[in-house]
Image (cartoon, rainbow, N blue to C red; front, side, top):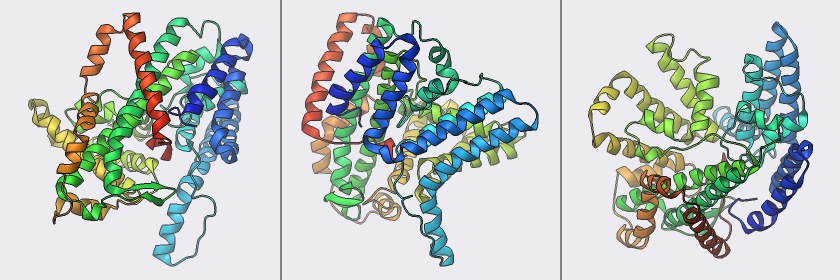
Length: 471
């Protein structure tokens, strides 16, 4: 079920909020859990057991870790991590490993049903694992109430595509329902949700039309609407498409995150921010402090620092970076382009740590140009695994031009939406909103107008899934 759908906005959400608000304090978490399970089951009921298994594994292991001492705690932590990762590895990566083993060794390994990726598995697996690790580290008290823990993992605002919420972010309000829901939080959350909806419906879906005009539209891996084709695109058109893709993925994912944060506030929870105007960065290091913040924080907290971080000398730090970025790339998808994408960013981050950061600190304009150029090429690698693209074909179109369909027609048709999407990807709109958000009538008017426009587009536009549902 999409946040940007009529079914969610006018059926599920009103019913879920009504039940949640009228529930007695002691039953609010149970109501939230049931509503979240219904939300997930709406389109993925056959995989509901996977999420339930991950919840049970980490809940039971969390109890055992919290109540045990000595080596037993390490054993229970290992069981929690192995149990959680086994689900993720099989359903997300087994097909990739089997396919490559068959190519390399001529084997006939078959992985039935693993090709269909359970919705949100990467997010709720990492979230559950962070809880078990934090209980082991004694940075959070183990949760003895399975309803509370289930509500934490399955909470529908952030279940499908994040942000990745740590148990410490929500545990206090999960355990104390009193005063959780307030009119102020509802007001702020509703505004954030509608602004996120507008980023998705009005901006992301708009610029994505240019990208699909080039590569075509696919559903279930099958071509639905034919595009120009990467092989037939000129270099200017290919670059225009990559810029559109960059604006699309930012507005799509940041829009979803904003909606999730807004829904969390309505329910009485404060989720961490996931984006901070990343396209305004002056380096790749800064970009990854601003993009998908909760994922970067997760890898830093649970992989990079346990490996030694930057505490064991520069050579070891570079090795740790390589491990983190190969895992980051692979987390995004079971494909060679994602591994290349992770390695690509590792190279630039390493270069900045070794020698480039000093020059970037001295520059004024060129660091932003450098960052945007690197990021756009990175998105080309990222998109290369999509149907109708291909890494070789896209990079030939970008860097070895040989004629093809020109960009003028598409630039003229999409100039408006590209300009608006670019404008809302910088810091100016946020600054302007900060100046008027304290005026309730202005904020209410903006929210109502945006909601009406978004619903109109949703009715006319049909089904457009969020990109990060694929990860």
